[in-house]
Image 1 (spheres, one colour):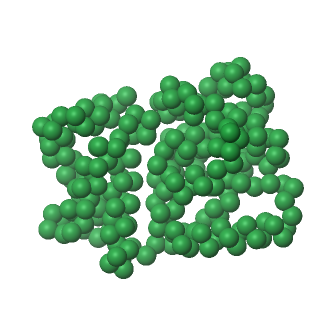
Image 2 (cartoon, one colour):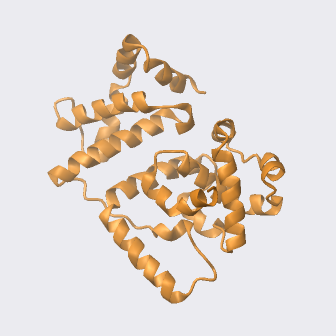
Image 3 (spheres, rainbow, N blue to C red):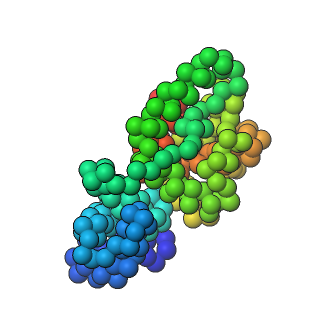
Length: 238
């Protein structure tokens, strides 16, 4: 665990340390607030108070399995400011992403695909701010592994049998927090361990490595909107 991640964990149970930690990160909080607001934010703005409270909440809610503390804190700050902005008519973002990116099926008929695209488009419109924030945040995490959110269109499993195999691999990792921590730390997928314990062919694990890692990051993190498009993985574990 990195030093500032450990410090955030310690601050949860030490009021003095918490106060010092927040004080040391005032510039970071202002930077996140300004980035979300698309304008300079000072301590005299309402956004400062909201962002400060969000940072405090991020410390309270943070745990090692959420990855980098600062990435987690930025996501919490963005969400709080977006909620505030909705009431003020601010931050009207647009989303240009196909939400069914995770759930393709080569055997699906054109009619069914068109229907699902129409439904997904409506969902994206209704929740565009939240989805955009989640995509922006998860893209930063994916970059540490050497791929982007949009690379998933090329490596997502198509056949039902392959999707089931990938789901088994993901669920195995999700049930083993130590492996989640290892993946986030080393940026590597423990293929040998998965192959041995889940009996998923190495070829599938290697071919769909990015997809499996992406699913683990999303389902073990704070991405409720994106997680909806991976719910079939959770269903496979039942």
